[in-house]
Length: 199
Image (cartoon, rainbow, N blue to C red; front, side, top):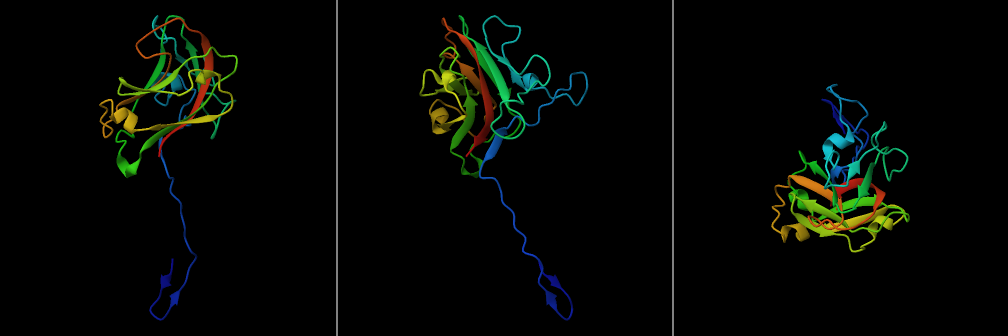
């Protein structure tokens, strides 16, 4: 930036900045261990609604005791989402209601990316992502839960649009295991998620 005076111009330092090439859906960094009724409470399982207290949904998100978000197994930042699934005659799913971003067409985004990390000891289960409660995309590997090491899953947003989702008004995102709305005999395990983004 230059400084302009009546008799001269003095060149200043060159300023530069970079902007992210993606839109964050959830990076799991904002969650805390503060319990209600404290107004500052922002626990991971209060935002990602799982199967706690139900008999048909085998998903449990977050740790039972603080830290509620995962802090030992993370891809980036300081936190990730631990996700426990039990598909014994259940389907496991956890749903985040979106405040922002809800317009998944802005800035020309065309794909949803999320990172996950399974365990070879997990029961092999299908993994899916659903938008607005209905339209689901399934991971190509039917045993995705057993993939070790952080792995990116990239989904073309057209997959959801082809199922009737208005990408300009996405209300919810669900991560699940099994076949959506079709419980069957299955097993259990734990998968971590991090860095859900739009590119």
